[in-house]
Length: 394
Image (cartoon, rainbow, N blue to C red; front, side, top):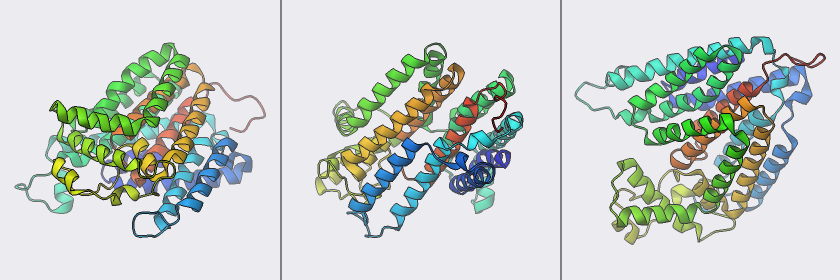
C-alpha cells in the first residue's frame, strides 16, 4: 500500500498536478486505517501537535467562521483545516511504528520507479514542446504551450527526490540515492521555475554543512526562519521598493510576485492581530493608485506566493505564533534524529521553506498534498537502518 502510494504520487503528479491532493489523501487515510488495525496507539498524533492544531482550529472557529472577506461561506475553511489535519497526522503520528522495516527497501525502490517515470514524462514535455499535453487537449502545433505549466510538477519531483535519496542511501545504496537526486533535478534544470532553482541552490550548501554540523545548521536555520516570518511584511515590501527604485532586472514572474507581496504587506496593517480569515488574500481590494503603479498586479491574486505573508494577512499575529510553534516542534523532531537523518531533514526543510516563501499558496491542495507526502518520505528516511529491538512492532 505504501509502495503503491509513493509510486503513484510522483508518476501521476507529473502529468496532472490536480492528482497530488487525492493521492496524498488516499495514502494518509490508508496509513491511518492500517495503524488503527495493527496498533491504535500508532494512530495517535504527537500530543503537542494535536494540542496546537486544536488550539488553532478553535481560534479559527471563534474569529474566522465565516471569513471577514469573500463570499461569507465557511466550507472552504473547514476543508482546508481538514487537509491540514491529515498533513500533521502524517508528520507526527506513530504510523511508522507498524511498518515492517525489512520491506522499506522495496518501498524505496517503488518510489524511485515512480520518480523516474514522472521525471521522464516531464523531460519529454519540456524537450519536445509538450507532445502529451497537445495530444490530450488537441492543441495544434501552431499554438504555443507555455513551458511554465510544468513548474509545479517539476518542483514536486525536486522536493520528493531529497528525502527519497536519504531513504535510498540508508536502505538500498548510494548509487540509487544519487540517481534519485538526478531525476529530481533534471526537470528543474530543463524548466523555467526560478523558485525551484533557488530551492536547489539553497539545499546544496545546507546539506553539505548539515552533514558535518547538523545542530548549528538547525539553530542557524531556525533563527533565520524566525526573523523572516516575523518581519515578512516589512522585508517583502522593502524588496519591492528597492527593486522598483533601482530598476533591478529579474524574471517577470518575480516582478509580478514583488507587486503581490507589496499589496499584501500593506493589508497586514489593517488587521495585524487576527487577520482577515482564510482565503482573504484573493479578495483584498486594490486602489486606483496601486493599479497605476503595478505593472502586472491589476487584480487580487489567488494567493500571496509567500506562506509567511499569507498567514499574516489571513490569521494575523496569532496565526504567526501558531505557525512558529509548529515549526519549533518540527525542529525538536529533527534534533532527535541521528546525524544522517538530520542532514536529510534539514535539506528537505530548507527546500520546502524556500518554495513556500516564493511560490505556492499556503492552502493550495496540491501544495498541502506535496508537503504531506514529502514529510512521509522524510520520516521513512529518518528510521534507523538497524533492526528494532525485540518486542517492538515492525
